[in-house]
Image (cartoon, rainbow over the protein chains, first blue to last red):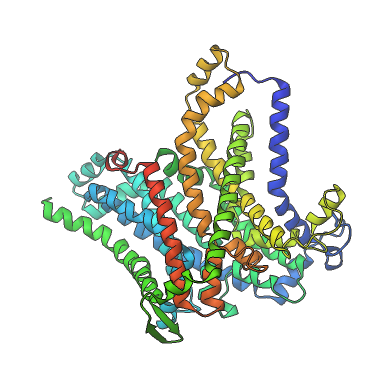
Length: 277
Length: 293
């Protein structure tokens, strides 16, 4: 790298900070509004910091709305989809890389195809089929829907991980008398742990953040997930913006925490596909 | 193991996922095609052949929506790419704080689009929104603007929110790409006395070109299919100014209760995405020998 002058460094940092402020400001405003008392929300000019900050909006949010229920619903469907797609993806990716290396490539093409299907096309049959079998307003319907588009991507990512584990390791385990399944569970899975963590995290985030599926597949307010419950509050006659932003904090915070803890895993997983090709 | 037992063992691993995907993707997709050939009223479906397709292609609403989709996708993708690449070049030059910055910059992309859109509804609120306040203080607008109330500003607003959400992803890809460029190439360029632009033109760009093509197609595919932001912010209004195809599909199916027509529009959208997908596969050159590596 070439040596950078102080002026150049200052310029680079200025640009970076300005852009960072623009990117992050909406989140600051969300937090700021959520901490304001109702009267101050509509103050003109708006206050950027306030001595009145309190958790009142959160208290009345929990007291007057089913936000706790939405949170639990989001958690159930996200964890359910994660468990289902990690298990299925790990089995499939291992089977493909070890037993059908040629089939794996064809399968990857199919997986890429499914990854490109428009959600709004698939929600039409989902809505029809789920109402036919009486699964509207159930967690299961959402778990199936989220797994359907998380699974192809999970298999795709895990194929990469399993390919990087040498076959000799499987063979050594088999020589020691392990069955195919034992070799997979006891030897290969522990080695693939970073990949499994990335896939699990990715599925969880996709399911947690998803909106249009839940919008269509749940009509009963007690089955709403956070994203739907929050978007619904916008349509109310007189929007309580501080409570609405408190709800947004509750939806966004778990994502931000998970992400900053596991950033390395996630970033390498996201970029691997595109950068390596 | 005999080849036959190997095959069986392999199938046992692959079968659960294959059966699952058949049930939750292949079958619903087939069902969507079936629906697109029927007029659906409650539980009754009447076969109408290509009637739904004839109808949507003869309907101005479809062509209008297609135009909005192209305008929205093109503006958003160009801005994602331009800003994302520029930002990656800047952040890549910094010596400290790169990881912290990456986490910070990626936040808009990590948070649910529906939630991000809700936050923006408050920022853009005509009377009490902070965006109007800041722009007025800065002297950019004389009086408050109802951003989502007028066709032109509503379109610009949803593009802006999509850019806010989409830039981080492109930046991340570009940053990863920049870090794979061998330092020796820059050193060689420096010895030759190459200036910043020349280094970009002859070292950075040739190394990054492939990734830019891949990122562009991926981003096109993702943006043209995206529903959540516009669905939450405007629902397609005002006067259809932001009614991109996914929003038109949703509105036709679940507001207009015309599932058959909606499915037909969905199939048309799928066709567009597939054309883009073919470009992507060509660009990524996902052929046997490379994938096997």
